[in-house]
Image 1 (cartoon, rainbow, N blue to C red):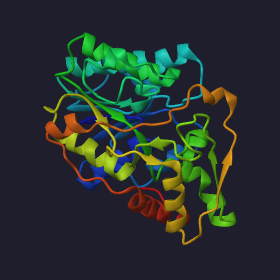
Image 2: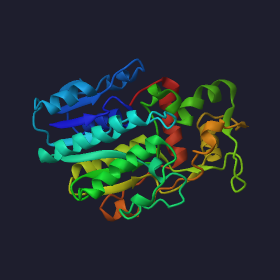
Image 3: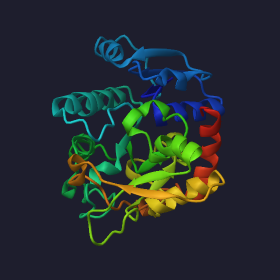
Amino acid sequence: MIVLTGGAGFIGSCFLGKLNEEGIDDIIVVDDLDGSGKWRNLLGKRFLDYFQKDDFLRMLEGHKLPKPGSVVHMGACSSTTLTDAAYFIKNNYEYSKTLAEWALTQKASFLYASSAATYGDGSSGYSDSDENTPRLRPLNMYGYSKQLFDSWVLDNGLADKVTGLRFFNVFGPNEYHKAEMMSVICRAFPRVRDEGRISLFKSYRKDYADGEQKRDFVYVKDAVDVMYSCFCDPGRTGIFNLGTGRARSWNDLARAMFAAMGKEPVIEYMEMPESLREKYQYFTQADMTRLKKAGCDLKFRSLEESIKDYAGYLQKGEYL
């Protein structure tokens, strides 16, 4: 039996679909279904049962759950603008510790989601070496909650017993419920389709022109392929980056969107809210050396290929 937290969320539901594709459906899905509409991500998926996250935690603590073979922990608050530190500690850090301890006690494999938000402004680089983790300075509470758990794993000597994946900028189908946390591709699609225009943030650093801020954009289909590879090899333990290893600019992304929709690019640059200016990442790029050496050397789609594929889902309102 597999426990999948965050199974109705963006990446979690796509991974659930991947498991189903591979003929796996002995899965308990855990999430926090609310008014966001993310329940639609579960439509057509196969699983044994579903529990709200708080109910699941009570069952876990009351020893009322069957023994799992694997725990895949994708559930977390991923908002980069929420400032409620106590909520992040309880929801992201303490919940993760409880699940990890339970999985290890049950001798189950434990695969969890970390984040590139741990790298902050990138001044300490993007190496996923264990030695680099304490040096990182996240720019928001979300990133800090993920760094806290990564550090807990390392400090307790668990890096050879669990697998963590630091997701970079993941985009693709099933993110429709994420409101302001949707990717720019998903959020900007209606305007590109209807008006033939897109707005990107201006740059506030002299070394980056407007729209030339760069991120490591990774398509969710590639992300879940990496997840499945790690899931199938529970001996591949440690904390690894999950990105393409190639940073691309927001201008590149915008041009790829227009190309996918057969339109000439019209890119506008808008002011960035002051609340974001000190917390904005101007460059991210995953160092993928460690994961490749660990035996996971999958080929990633290009940004252009990924956006073309995603546009097909957006045009039809389809889910993965």
